[in-house]
Length: 308
Length: 313
Image 1 (cartoon, each protein chain N blue to C red):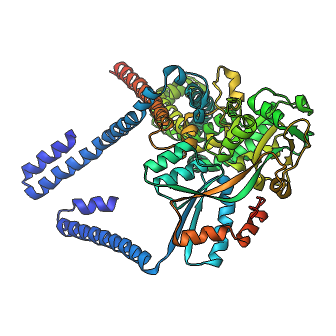
Image 2 (image 1 turned 120 degrees about the vertical axis):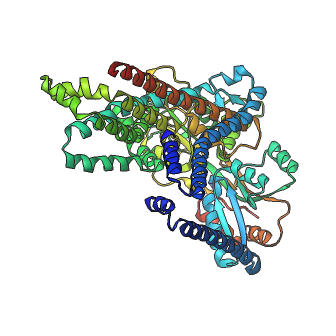
Image 3 (image 1 turned 135 degrees about the vertical axis):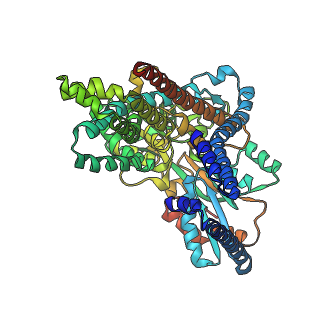
């Protein structure tokens, strides 16, 4: 900085230096322009195909595993996978910034309307199934809960573990943020028990954590906590609760078998959305995802493959 | 400005090349433009926030806006819990950063030997450069579990955890600026006080600190400004439950701040939906709060300077 000032103020070689500075600037700008043009030219000539894939955090690990495997199957296609939540993915699809949106819920009618208004037409693909596991700390003595009990816990009607057969401890409710598809699904199917006219909300002191990792961290260390998350995110250091649809039904633990047979009550489909009917390399990728090879990865990650 | 004009006049007298004179005029204009641009940018940002947030006031009833329920996906837009959450965390952070920050500054400037001070001050400033997401991780994995165990709370993800971390984030700012202010107090003040028989502590508390008051106050205000705008750390450690805080006991329960709400929800909202406009409204509230903090700080400093000048003259 000092150097610059002194060059500018020295009266003798001021002109020379200024012109030289100007020259450097011009060269830098020209170079920057060149490199930009160069890369874009490369893109079109070498036919590097890029698929932008964004959305549900539930699906992100699965989508990454697929993207990695697809590099082996078809190295000419580059996949960029990011999370952010189902709503984020669909919003990006509507705005045209991604090719494929991942969603752990069906597209909402408002979203579809906005999309149609923007001239895009989201096409839906079911790519895997997922069960939502209810998780607690390993030391929590509670093994089973009915859907009604879980609903009562999350809506704030039950506030102590002893009311559901546990220790005398306050219940700390953990949830994903409202932009998570898992959050919306849990609200509709568990807290509201799937009833359309049920307007129950999450208890106001439900902790809204921005990531699955946040929920896992709290569950591992806090014996007061209850949380829910996709089966793929459950690790050995938390306890999975068996769930029954009603008090008369058996308690079922989530697993590939119980989800595929439809016994486990909190399970859902996972989706990918494209902008209009997919064509070319995007269609090839989606076809590959539905193949047996790709569905094997689904099982490895703790999700449930779609039964053909 | 006056000096510059003076210089230009003197150069004219010597008969300096008019080309150079023109260049100086140009440079002056450029510097002036740079100065004004800050004001213009702030004005434009405010205008943008205003335009984007006004539809929210039209679309959402005031009773909904002032309710205590924030659940935007079901059209509950009560912003009071968010404002309360931000305020309680900021107050908590200030209560931590003020004594620790000013204490450290006093130690560094008045008590520590020169070599220790030369090592400690850069270290404190490095603390200020820690990415807030890293602090958030530490808070989530270490601080909050221990808070839960020590204080027997239902969960450690609480306003307290947020306050402690934000206090930590604000401390380097407070230390750095108040140390500079204390350092600027003339040595003669201290010498006079000690010569009158005051102890070292009396000198610090009654003479040096009051003399550096305006600088220390600026430091604290800047620290508060840093704390109220912090996002990532609070999002990770405060639990984000939109509960309206009503008293000091709520320092131990989870809260949701305005910044965390904007950060968590902005990615999801559809462009120009009611929720989108409400988030901008929250942005403008945040903007106004930090504006009030800054204006209050400079007003206090200004008034103090004036009264000091009066005493000296």
